[in-house]
Amino acid sequence: MKQLDVIIVGSGIAALQLANKLAKSLNVIILTKKELTAGNSYLAQGGVAAAVAPGDDPYLHYLDTIEAGAHHNNSEAVLEITKKAPELIKGLWESGCRFDEDGDGKLLLGMEGAHSEKRIVHSGGDATGKHMVDFLLSNLDANISIEQSTFVYELILDSDATRCIGVKSKRMDGTNETYLAPHVVLATGGCGQVFAFTSNAETATGDGMALAYRQVPSLPTWNLFSSILHFFMWMERREASYLKR
Ligand SMILES: Cc1cc2nc3c(=O)[nH]c(=O)nc-3n(C[C@H](O)[C@H](O)[C@H](O)COP(=O)(O)OP(=O)(O)OC[C@H]3O[C@@H](n4cnc5c(N)ncnc54)[C@H](O)[C@@H]3O)c2cc1C
Image 1: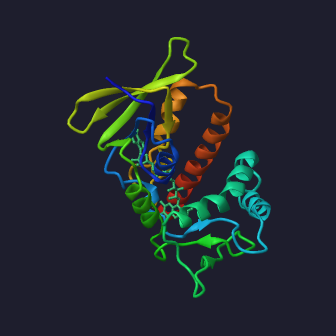
Image 2: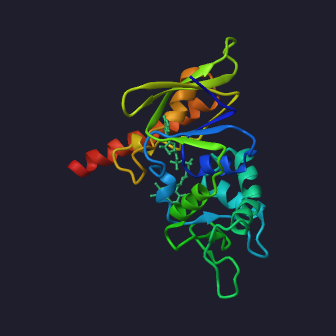
């Protein structure tokens, strides 16, 4: 059993960005079920959106995102993310993450579907995710340890079942390990692998959602998530049956 200050499950951009932001005095561990780079982040090509252009505004980015999501988005989350995006991109750029620049040394901004302004930042052209992950990995301090090939399969709750205090994991060699910490962060990415056809990494199997659902099945967003998932799976089956005709 290992005791830490923070456990981060996953090693994509979400996990690595958090690891880089945490205080250096904390004893942090990153647990990831395959190699460090085996997630969707390493595959991301199209760039990152942020309202950084003169004349652009995070609120316009918010409106475009809500429109693109057909108003099904969690508007509070979209507002928070679009508001924080410029400062996060500038912070990464200033700390040495090499985003593509124009001839004047300013961020080169691309235009993509659903955006009403130029706000797509790239790194190394279409290798944005790879470059950002490599940069974030190279910046990790000595207080962050990493366990690869470590599959987290269960959350541990305290005796009142109100707080997560650790995780149970299985390593590739079949051995088990328990990690305890007052802070546990699930940064396990999406669930694209539920579909028969997907460009997602093979690690995108919705583990974080399943881990949380097992402990808190009453979370209000589960019903919506489950309905959307069933709808898309129904569409996929329908398309497959048309193709077979
Ligand atoms: C082909 C492709 C292109 C994309 N292009 C873009 C783009 O241009 N712009 C954009 O903004 N977004 C893009 N995306 C989406 C983007 O990649 C994701 O939204 C983002 O990378 C998610 O980051 P993450 O850290 O949440 O998840 P991930 O990068 O998927 O990381 C999840 C991590 O959790 C680990 N993990 C999962 N379950 C467990 C478990 N049980 N135990 C231990 N570890 C576990 C995985 O191994 C992985 O390390 C693209 C996605 C794909 C697939």
